[in-house]
Length: 406
Image (cartoon, rainbow, N blue to C red):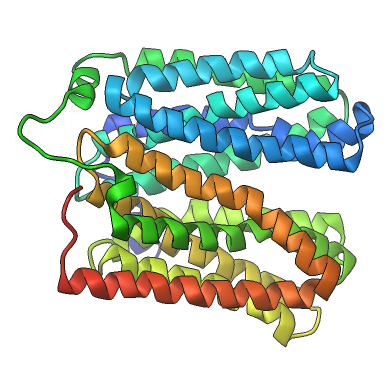
């Protein structure tokens, strides 16, 4: 049994290019420094004496800057390639984190936050394009899963370290965030220097007619469904922890363990899972299944009374849903894109998640304010059912008319 498990892990991680591993290492270092965002609201209200409304506006600017950065990053990626944009975004983001530590008025911090988020998220379309470039059709989904593994490891490590740093000095959060960004940029320059990849990723494919993702109607439907699902998934980070604390009366330590369990399940099982199921069915089938599992996870809160086992089961279902849906979402948009419009496809996908990041806490708070948590969970279940059905409809449509490259 043990030998079989080792063999499964070996197969899951074999066959990936060294460049994919390098990109994941850069992502891990970058995400290990993601410490400012989780503590930004506390920093604004407790250290800078902003009102909660002002702090909320600052957080909304993270999402707005993310949308702008993704849009611009996608355009630039398709024109100059992914290499220098990644490096530039990491360097500029790093220096903006350092600069943010000196901005203490509402106006200056608002402007700085928007610019920082725009710089940071210009990186994402370029990075997604790079992962596609350094992978093959056979291992593309696993390459994205490896990248997600690095993000989850880095987020878990950075979150834990950030809590320790914040308890001593909030300013250090900005310094560490900035330095890890700059370190990641230098590492990217060292491990993946510009060369043939830059020329190849930037050049136009002669004779190939491509169109904008904004003209790809099926992809636009996919983006709308993705934003709906993402707004449900983000309740996991926003309203769900508050629900566990204030309604089910779990303590912070247990809530933290639940969050950690999500990351650990992903780290330990996602690559093996993807290796087993990739290619067995079309990507959209697994996306539909994953979204449905997330909806079921939230349904448990309204069906069962407060209990540890319900919280644990819900977290397992959310994590399974995430693992089924998210890697194959990347596979879908990659399959619909071409060499010279991949950056814009990646940008639109990033924008869907950024928009959901703004939308999720807004409608979550409104539902809780006027209908309580129960109404929010019913709404999440309904949205997940709609999104799952929508993704499955795309799956059936593709079976009748296979997707053509944009």
